[in-house]
Amino acid sequence: MYRVLLKVENLTKHFEGLVAVSEVSFGVNRGDILAIIGPNGAGKTTVFNLISGMLRPTSGKIYLNGEDISGLKPYHIAHKGIARTFQTTALFDQLRVVDNLAIGYKLRTSSGFWSTIFHTRRWKEDRAGCEAKIMETLGFIGLAEKALHFVSTLSQEEQKRLAIGVALMSSPRVILLDEPTGGLIQEETDGITNLIKKMKAAGLTICIIEHKMRMIMDLADRIVVLNFGEKIAEGTPEEVSKDQAVIEAYLGGDYVA
Amino acid sequence: MVLQLIKQKWFYLAILAIALAVPLLVPNRYFFQIIIISCIFAIATLSMNLILGYTGQASLAHAGFFGIGAYGVGLMTKAGVSFWLALPASALLAALVGFLIGIPTLRTRGSYFAIATLCFGVIVSIIAGNWVSLTGGHTGVVGIPRPSPIPLPLAGEITFQTQTAQYYLVLAFLLLTLFVMHRLVYSLQGLSFMAVRNNEVLADAVGINTFATKMLSFVVANFFAALAGGIYASIIGSISPSTASYTLTFNWLVYLLLGGAATLSGPIAGAFAIPILMEYMQFLEEYRQLIFGALLIVVIIYFPRGLMGGLASLRVKAVNYSHRRKAGVPSAAESGKPDQAF
Ligand SMILES: Nc1ncnc2c1ncn2[C@@H]1O[C@H](COP(=O)(O)OP(=O)(O)OP(=O)(O)O)[C@@H](O)[C@H]1O
Ligand SMILES: [Mg+2]
Image 1 (cartoon, chains in turn cyan, blue):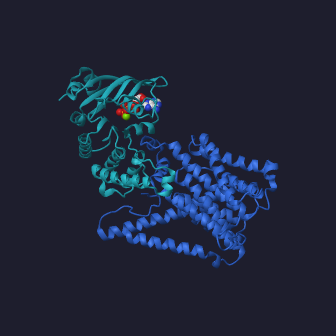
Image 2 (cartoon, rainbow over the protein chains, first blue to last red):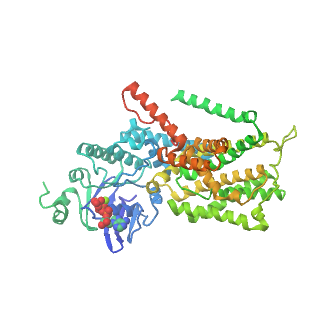
Image 3 (spheres, helix red, strand yellow):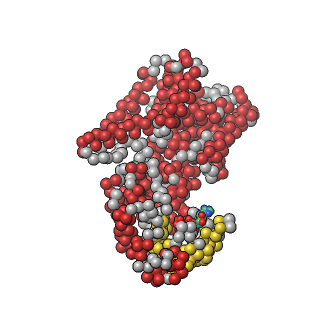
């Protein structure tokens, strides 16, 4: 058991000449919420894409509980226990809420082709496990009433909850949330904030990208600040909000209030 | 919900009863033959539906695999191998070829995959036409024996010389295919196919090995395509390169799109309705193609989920409407969408 569950070391990503992420290192403690903040184009989403395997790092390493997972394929990293959501909400929009959740559970199951054809005991166990987890998750994300609705009939906020639900279905060790309240009004933002607090209370380790400073100061245990792909500060919300470099680069001189 | 399930059960039982009674209902041998071929093509269309409808990968190699099954069974049974050995052997061969073809082609997406598989399909029919010593070239293989009789413990054996016996044989294989497709589609495995179709990036992110998922769908689809081809060869008795031609693929594509892709009833409805309609429209001669072309365009634009998909969404609308009327609350689809699973 490492206290630092997720660790990135000197993570770097070049896009033909553009340095999107440069020598970034940080760790996420077990059970903590770590926020990554920074101006538009700072490289936050790229860091998530590197951790979740959607992009290969140009250099640098990623460790989960001490195990090197850099450069693995996304589905492989999901199996290791890292789940994520996307900045522009990604769902299976041709399917219903329950179907979306069930797909999130797939990696917990082991039935293959033959078990599926013959409805073996393993298949039945997998199905029972899936149904139980769906019920639990529906309650957790507050979408029980919409279980059989198609994704296209959900509001934007409900879709964001569902995207988190899909990620939770695999019982991940770490969950990466990319702007989970992007485009929502204040009231809806509070709803998602409460959901994230509930996730932390349930023992999850969370890494979150957000622009809404009030929300982050309230939620985060630690904050990493990126600017032009480089880490310019790291610390508790108080430390970061007093940091001179951060104030200049990002928050603007008169933010700290 | 429960009432609906019971109603559905009766509906399926009624269809099954009609299917079993077909030999009593057909007006003549010619029409019976059309029904038998429709059963075989329904198997091909159902399997095409798995890779194209549910998994979203437009494989146009389907007739190529149908041809592998047909030539496999034709050549093996003529050489004296039992049909009951030749059929699974040919289907497994097609599955293996599909696996090998899938390794490069399934890494491509969208129209690239369609073109790559179309090329493979064309290559199969070219080989069938030109490897004269094996395939008989453009004359093909003739005099293929009927399926070998099945010995019964006490009362002789089941032979497949009559149309009625042949019909029950193809019906049994159609039901087997439908059973396998049903089990696959209504499971987490089926949801994984749809996940890949709907959003491959997200599927990957939630831990689905998208390449392996597409491969499974492709291999199973090709297995059943070849199964259909093998039965076809043995029932019809002669095959030629046209048995592997892409025109067959496009016919099935039309059955699939008109009937309703990503439904289980759609491919079957398409495979029966269209050939039968074609027969009744004989007098229109060449114009039939024109009419079906126009119909296809209309369906793709206005009923993108085909006849069965369209019917299902109408039902959903009706259910929602009556819910709203009764309860005064909006309610979305509770039933109807055919690709709902679990
Ligand atoms: N796949 C890609 N190919 C090329 N350039 C990319 C790619 N992804 C990101 N970039 C570039 O890398 C930089 C960092 O982008 P990134 O999306 O990580 O920013 P961000 O911090 O998430 O910004 P925002 O707050 O707007 O979401 C940007 O200049 C962006 O244009
Ligand atoms: Mg971003």
